[in-house]
Amino acid sequence: MKPKLLILELWGLGDLVIATPFLRAATEKYAVTLLAKPFAREMRPRLWPAVEVVPFIAPWTAFRFHAKYSLWRWPWNEMRRLRRELQAKNFDCAVSARWDPRDHFLLKAVGARERLGFSRMKSQRYLTQELQRPDPIAHRSEYWRRAGHALALSLPARADLIPPARAPAAVALIHSGARLPARVWPLENFQRLAARLREKKIAVQIACDPDQLGWWRQRGETAACPRDVGELFALIDQAGIFIGNCSGPGHLAAICGVPTFTVYGPSLHEWWAPMHPAAEVFEGRACPYKPCSDYCRYAEPFCLWSVPVDEVWPRVEMFAAKHLEKIPA
Image (cartoon, rainbow, N blue to C red; front, side, top):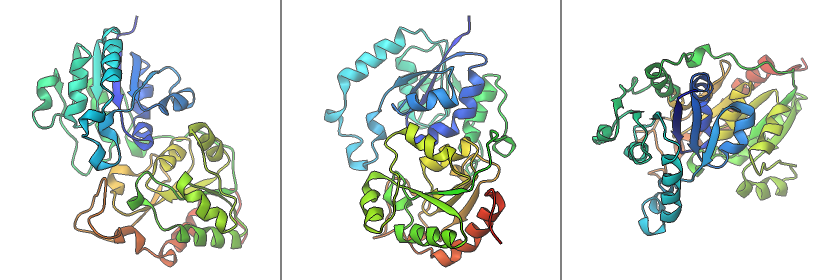
C-alpha cells in the first residue's frame, strides 16, 4: 500500500497548473490527496486523474485584501469539519510549496506525521523538514521541484518539459481576462490585435471573464465566456496559440500543449511564465514597486496600460506565423 501524501495548493488556477508536474510524479509513489479550490475537481480527470481532490476555499485566499482577515466571516464550522476529515485520513506526509505559515499550521493541525515546507516567520515550528528556498528570481515551479527532490521524486526543469502532442490548429485564442484588474491589458488593445490577426486571414476566438462579456458584445464580438474549467478546456482544445494576460487560462493552455504569448505588467514573468517551451512573454514598463500582488499603488497600472498595440503586434505576428498551422503569405 502506498503511503498517504497531502498536498496543499489553495490559491489560483495558474498556481495549481504549475503544481501539475509535482502532482503527477507524486502519484507514482504516494496515494495523493490534494486540498485545493473546487475547480481542482474539474481539472483532475484531465491533468492528474489518480489524485483525490478535497475542495476548500481558504478564507485567507480572498482576492479582496480587506476581506482576508475579517475573522468573524470565516467559515469556522466548515474548517473544523475539514480538519476532522483530514485527520481521519492519517497522512504519512504533507507538503506545501508556499512559504506561508498558514499552510504550515494547517499541515500540523491535520496531524500529518512528516510535514515539508519553506518556512517564514518562524513557521518551521510546524514542520518536520524545512526546505531551502530556490533563488529569489526562480520560477514558482522550482519550489515544487525542490519539494519533489526532498520526497525522492524526479521532476524535470521547466525548460525540459515536453508538451503533450496536439493536432495542428489554425485558431488564435485571445483571452482578455485575469483574476486581478491590474493584470488586464486594456480590452481595446486585444480588440486591435484580433483585427490585425484577421487581416492576416487568421481565425480568432475571443474569450473573456464575465465582467468583460458586455464590452465585447457591444462591439459586435461573439466572445466566449467559460463558466467553468471544462468549458475553458474545450476552447483550448480548438486553439493553435493562446494570447492573453498573466492569468490562469494561459497556464492551463500551456500545460495542455498550446504555445502562449503573455503580456506582463505588475507580475514577474520570471516567476509566472506559462510552462510550455514555446511560451513567449512581452514585458511591460518598469515600475519601482514591481511585482505587485493584490493592488497597484498608482491610479492605474501604467506598467501594463501604457503598452501600445504597435509595440506588441510585431511579436504577436511572428509568434502566430511560427506556431499556427498555416499563415497565408
